[in-house]
Image (cartoon, rainbow, N blue to C red):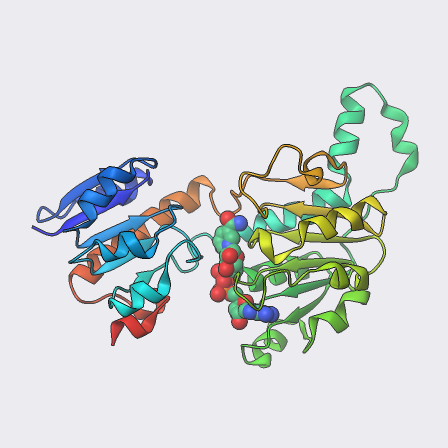
Length: 321
Ligand code: NAD
């Protein structure tokens, strides 16, 4: 009987989908129980994985694995080279949580523009007259630069257009007509567009090219008073340089769902800075997204075991050859 490991809890909807198949042995492994995982992976046929770093040693201990179904979009916690060499496809959840991350990005843009933390705390302290400052901003009529026009970036673009913003997008890896057809302006070089953007949002994967894409030099090129949102991966932005840019007043605010180190250290100055709006890496984790992600990764496992895994969900398609 094929064995499927669910590592770390997923929504019941996904577990129920797997259980609807009588011919499966389902093995649920708790988040920190590495010993059980190491033992069970040896003869497992499928693995549903959330955040655990799945390194070479663990993959090499498996003898029958036919699919790793990531409960998420990124694959940076998996040793892809080893998975591919062993012909194990790594499947992700497609756009199951794209709208969730897109909404969080709009929340960051709005919360930073409206100085949500400052005015909320002022009202609670009885300082109603702070309203005289009227120094919060509108999205209307302003320019946003979206870096990465994939599943999330294009949903952010559509929502920004609904706010009547001017939307510029940089993604050299897709046909530029897709950006134009979405009513946005393509830019070839994001650095060139930084000085005119009131908002900069990153929606690219983390890799060697994008690590510190927003570094000290990029931050310096940003328009004074601009707002940065990162709901992609922490290391895409140089956190220390971002703090300097906020501290000097060059940037007006930043929304961060992700950090260099997670969880961030309590003495990370971005945590105490008044111009940051923070979330604990849950941009893709709403109630609805959890159900969609759990059912998608369970379906990916079932499809892989049936030999009909949809390649559009597979990250390392070479493993399907
Ligand atoms: P996607 O693969 O659909 O889109 C990424 C886009 O970035 C692609 O179109 C690609 O061509 C483009 N790109 C790659 N390198 C680029 C570069 N150097 N410059 C400009 N564009 C570049 O991915 P997605 O589903 O939109 O997700 C984007 C990222 O968001 C993921 O890689 C993941 O790290 C992150 N994410 C975070 C959460 C969260 O909880 N905060 C949830 C889901 C995804």
